[in-house]
Each structure stands twice: as structure tokens, then as C-alpha cells.
Image 1 (tube, one colour):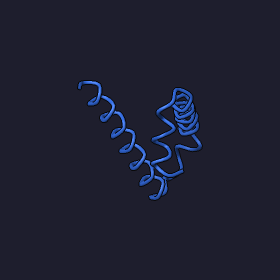
Image 2 (tube, helix red, strand yellow):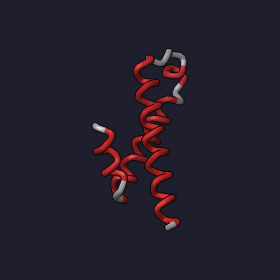
Image 3 (tube, rainbow, N blue to C red):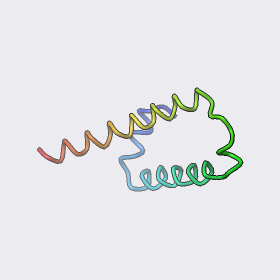
Image 4 (cartoon, one colour):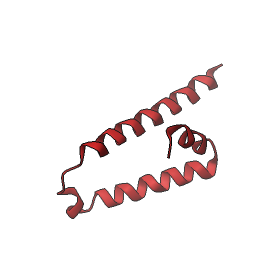
Length: 68
């Protein structure tokens, strides 16, 4: 999914819940010992960094607009 589309989905309550559910499922999967022993592919790390940057941008823009 393109980052622009993800940004639009997060604006709704249902989208936020969907995103959070996906995050929780990913964290539960990642905590499994058999998964933790495996090396992480560089492409996955790049995608994770991009996702976290997008999330941080979205949150900071929402906070700054509330101040005005």
C-alpha cells in the first residue's frame, strides 16, 4: 500500500484500529522465539524505517495543527 493511502486510512477511527491491530499482530509474531532467532532482511528494515517516519510525521502534523 502506498504511504499516501496509508495516511488517509489513519484519519478514520476504523483505520486507526485496523493499523493498531496490525501492529499488535506483528509484535506478537515477532516475539516468538523461532522468529527472533532469524536474521532480518535489509529490505524489511528499510520498510520499517519508512513506516515509522511516516507515522511520526503524521502525529507531529496533527499535534501542530491543534495548537493553532
